[in-house]
Length: 360
Image 1 (tube, rainbow, N blue to C red):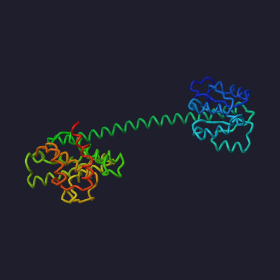
Image 2: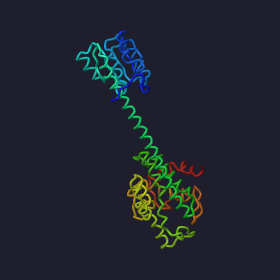
Image 3: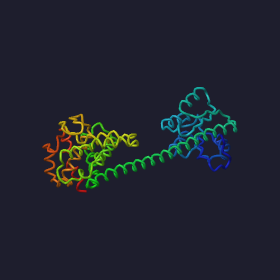
Image 4: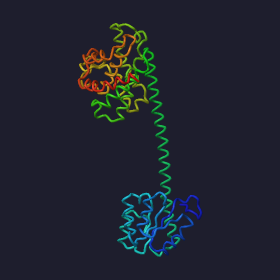
C-alpha cells in the first residue's frame, strides 16, 4: 500500500490528537504534521465535542486513555453509540495498555492500541495504513453509489421508454377504432383511484397498484386483430360480428404472451389477465371463459367497471354519450352486465372523484 508523502495534496482530512499532556501532543504533532493537518484537544470531553460537531473533517483520532473529565475509553463508548467508530478510525496511544483496557478498547471498536513511549516509524506506518484503508473504503462506497445512481437513472429511463411504447400502442389502437387516446389514460386513472382510495386495493402495495394501472391501458390491445368493418361499425353488430369482436380478449392475451420483454416483468401477469378477462361478469355471463364471482381477479374487475363507466359517459361510434345520472343508473341496475356488490360499493364511494377526471 502506498503511504502518503509529506505535502501530499491528497491527505484526507485532519488528524485529531486527544491527550491531556502537552508534551505528548507535541511529540505526535511533530510526527504526523508533515502528512496531515493537525487538531488538538486537551481532554476527552473537548475531543468528543470536536468529533461530534463535524466527524467528517477528521481522517483519524489519536486518543489517550487516562484524562480528566472524560477518559479515552468513555470517549470510545460515546463514539460507538453514535456508530462513528465504523466510519472514523480511532487509535489508543497510552501507557495504560493493560489487558483489560485493550480488551475493552477493541470491544468498543478501536482500530489499534499503541503503547507509550511510541516508536515513531512504527506508529506512523500503523496509523497511515489504517487511514489509507478507510479512505479506500470511502472511495469505493462513493464509486458504488455513483454507479448505483447511474444504473437507477438508466432503469428509470428504460421504464419511461417502455411505458411510453405501451401507451403509444394502446393509443394507436384507440385511434384505429375512432376513439380518443384519452380513453386509455382515463382507464389508467380510474383503475388507480379504485385500488388506491377504496378497500378494493387492500393487500396490494403501491408498486402492484402502479403496475395494474399501467397494465389496464392494454386491456383492448387485442382489437388490433379485429377487422375495421366490425371495429368501426356504427350500428348493432350481427351475432357473427359480435363473436369476432369478443375474440379481442383472447387475441390480446395471446399478443402480450408473444412479447418476451414484457413476460420478463411483473407487469405481464396483470396485463394478460386484464386483457383476457375484462369482459367477464360477476354472474358468469361474461366472456371468454364465463368466470363468475371471485374467480375474476380484483384488477380485472376494476378495469371492467372502469371500461364500462368510461364507455357510457362518452360518445362511441355505435352510440351517443349518456348523462352521468343515466350511466350510474345503468351500472347500478346491471344494464351493462352484473358487477360484484363489493366492487359497486367501492365504485360509488369514489365516483365523485372519478367523474372529476372528466373535468380536467
